[in-house]
Image 1 (spheres, helix red, strand yellow):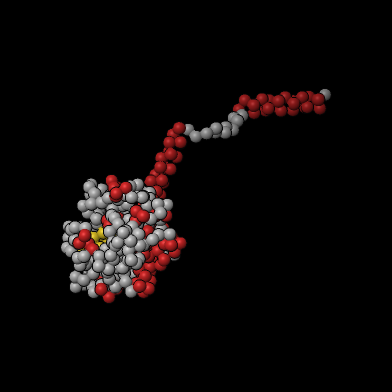
Image 2 (image 1 turned 90 degrees about the vertical axis):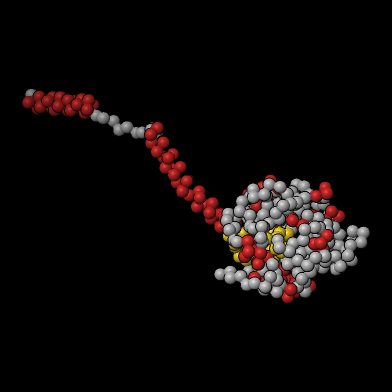
Length: 332
């Protein structure tokens, strides 16, 4: 009897403890998601991180574009030196009015022989194959251009065929000596480097040149020194005139009917453009400029590439654009 009673007491004790455990047991809770406050905090943190990272990413990308732009100009420098070595002349900006421009002359010297073979330097731009002249040369395009404009013009003067654009312009000299009328460009002595050919050297008959066209100058004619003279620079493109010829200066870079598309000048009254909407009307200011904020890249005659601030004073710009002003500019 004692054994049975003791077992009964144990059973009652165990049952009592089980009931107490069931009463006081608190189950574990698993969160099903974020609260609204937690979610807002996470979103705010992500926004702050993006705000910190995005400018840095943009800066890295722009730095890469600047590097590529400078490499383009260096390749052009090699092409100029190889061309002058082969012909003893610097190519003309165009041999005669409406004829092809200096990039076409350089094509065989920048691995563009196939494209050069499809163009006829003895014929004007408007007589070229309309499909051929839409072919762009990669090193003539600044990588920042694709962020703003297309690489093919949308209109040309005299209803000429549209063609490939380009972002680099030959240095046609300073504003102090640049001729004011069309035909004097082919007769007057100017102080640039990439100028229109002389009419006496490039006679045109029935829209045909007797040869492929002759430039005006040799390296020896750059009396200020190759390291002191611009050969090519980034050209200013007005946002209102993008891809337009007829004086806007962004038609096909092969079109010698619009000299502004392949040439620029600088100096007094013709400083470097500081913004993309600097000029609102066509043909007024064929000046140098750049999509790179605050900086314009130039190819010097010795093949080096330098960046100049858009705040460069106009007198210094004049001296660097003129091949024979007789002055020395301290560049370092």
